[in-house]
Image (cartoon, rainbow, N blue to C red; front, top):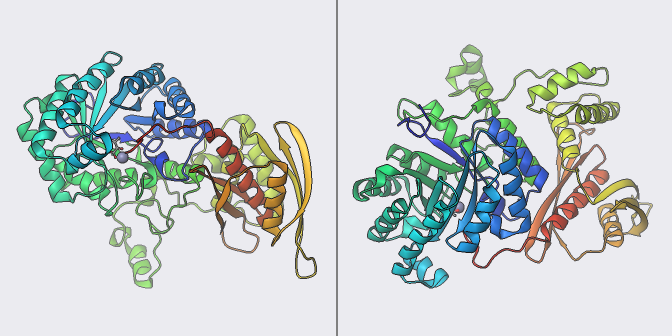
Length: 518
Ligand code: KIV
Ligand code: ZN
């Protein structure tokens, strides 16, 4: 039986690389998107929305490359209800084994009047036109009614019916502004099932934003009311307060089949791997108390809880840590650990990197083990991620020297960078050592981007811990997060700044189309 014909099967549509990337600062470059796509496919995501091809050449390329890479999941691109968007999207998804065009138009009175400046009848005509055009390219078309939860019911029914008539196999009813509540949303889905005559020809999809913290609850309520596709993102990344978190939707369905007898195709043991990857790539740290993937999600601190856990894990645990990919074996590696143990640990942590990358990572692990006695899992993750984010960089740090302290004023930095293959060096001063080092970067690679965030986080405990630094830069309304890890906080800081600059360079060619909402 196919996933679509199984009545209790909920399709998981991941939009981390499209809606997720719309979070300010959460940009991803091509390599990062390909790595995420690989993990999403491996974990059994049904549909991967890889981007918005008309938005920029970078977005087009990402969707196109993901389409070439992924074989099992459907690869989808987003398009507004215009010919130019749909044509570009069709071209981008063309190489995919299974491709989908997702086209949308706003249907609420507010959006139609002020954003689109179109009459309802014009919007309705556009629904049919856009879906028909998308169908001329692919068999699998999804249509979305942007701001559906604030749309008049009669009009929503007419639009949904028109979209299905024109050939949409999936109709998405987004809560674009995170406004609805579970009961109301379930009623809306029920209303569409009752009133749209051709509704059984399409899968009903839901797409919930989290402005009121109800994204997951609304999605689950909609599933109970008949929706069979949930659009979500890893770690709940997304516009404003984000989208419904994939890990929460999936684990809620898996943990409570007694009240929600539905299945997904997700290999839940890969959840943590996906979460770490997305957090690493975007620089968006996962809050410790975040459901399912937070560092404390399976930690039991209170004595009474620990006592209960020792007697029976079920006392305080409703799902096992292993079921989301959290390994409990915590044998710490150190400088005497061999390559075999290191490779095994990489596998346990979900890294499947090629031989050359393993070789590099092992060398860096040995260097790290010389600097710190115990190398924890978190260190290995930081080390491997740190290496991978730097592939294809135009700017690379070669060396850094810093002089500072009470007797060395002003703080001074000496920095060597490789810029487009050319080695450049500079000496500079600043208000502090970080400022001095960043001034050197600006000197060697002049730019107008403004520093919006500088954040240091210790990867593990202890004074020999690696520092993980996040730097956010903003230029002409575009912001990017860069990341760097090292036992030397200054080195980590420069790596993070340089990483952000490299991402900005990739982003510079991105031009957002007008009224690029959703
Ligand atoms: O939130 C929204 O309405 C969207 C649509 C494009 C599906 O992201
Ligand atoms: Zn959205």
